[in-house]
Length: 439
Image 1 (tube, rainbow, N blue to C red):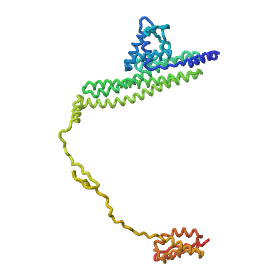
Image 2: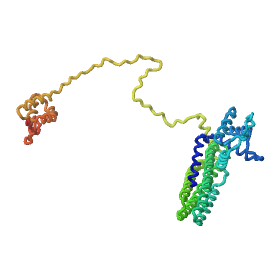
Image 3: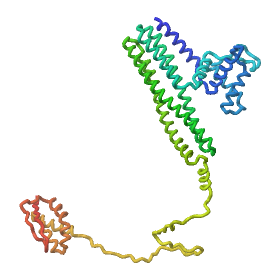
Image 4: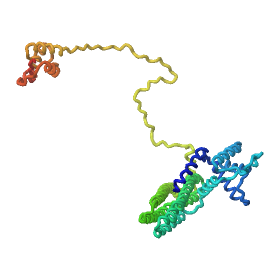
């Protein structure tokens, strides 16, 4: 009943948002101006909520000083920021009257603008609290909820005293942990840029400062790795107990909430493991160099002497071997310097040798003998070979054409398998008989 009656109201709100083209389109300088306005109104003694145009101009100048903008366009940027904040319903006119001068205009933060400014103030403030304290408070919350989960039985009590607390308080606690990690990331990046500048200095104090910074990094990494991993194991155990208790009592939604918090804990553990590995490796490389400098050249005398020796050209050299010979594959025929010679032209009087090539007519003669034998009804391989030799062909040439002759013979008849005797066709040459009968 309540859901059906509330549904038309939601639809009307959605239609209003779409019709009015409401959008929160803010730039970083607009959000920064919101934060300054919120800080300005909170720090006043008279508790006034309105802020004048002159004060806004001073706050915008502070944003410009951090954003490194051209001072000539400050008034235009302020006007554009005010227009965007008013369109986004983050800022409103406080005078409600038409004024003759813009200097008399007053503005005030809306509830949306206050919430945006408060959220950024809360989630960007780094108190420097150790990660151990944050996670101990986190586990303390889980422990109290675990005890309540064991005692409470009704679903209404579970939703009010356990699930609601887990969805709000514990998620905010994990967001604080992630904000702590992001701040440490920024500090570590600044340290990585800071260490090389110290190593390039010549004084001995820079080495001590380097060691101090690296020791601070190792302490931070140890806190991240040991405390987070041990606290995560305890948190996983408490979450599992709460989830088991909720399943035993048939509480809806407890599994989804526990899995969501477990997923956030898993991301924190992955971050600490990766950062610890990266920074331990970075610390090892830099610290090895520092130990070498401290042990060998603490005053940097050898280093500076080596730099000067490399930069200065040597006054003498020592020849320990002759230069290698350069073996050329052809003779250098270039003329001496200052002497010009006529260009060499290609010769055209070479004698062209001619060789007469005798055309091989043996296949034609063998084919002619084959056709004469086919007229008789049979063809014998040895008879054709001996006839060609008698007509003047060389025996070796005849033997070279026998495979071709076999192909031609089989095209015109069938092979007689009974005729397989060996016959002598020339001196020292004997071949097996092949007899073809015409079809």
